[in-house]
Length: 167
Image 1 (cartoon, rainbow, N blue to C red):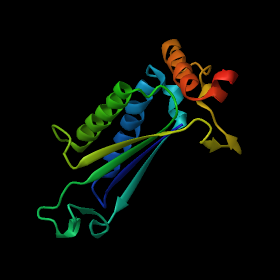
Image 2: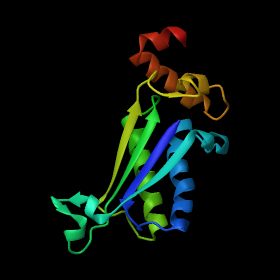
Image 3: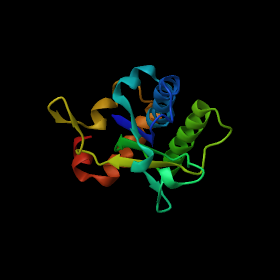
């Protein structure tokens, strides 16, 4: 389960850019998360586009409506279930997201005013369908590589004795 939220000023992204980003941002996280390109895993991803008026965002202490020239501010928040999120995996996700944003926006490189936040929801702290979810129940779905499944089991076992006993 992954949620990617793209926060922008109103009208910054058009319909075609949002269509392209829905897929590109999903894949930017999906591949490092499961260890391979697995289209079946896309069902566990949501991408939300949130637009705000320029007078509802500020940078450097000034509303964007008052900034000259208007700053191209975007914040992309990635929220994932606990798993194998070592620093190098997080860095790969952030770099892939920024590259996807630049491509969709038709620029050579991401703006320094585009920021990505990466959050991990602790095991046992995510719910859907009337219950608590665990990434461990997804490991045998066929979308995770054997190496990624082992890394997730190791990561969760090292941090959570309860999970280690049930794994």
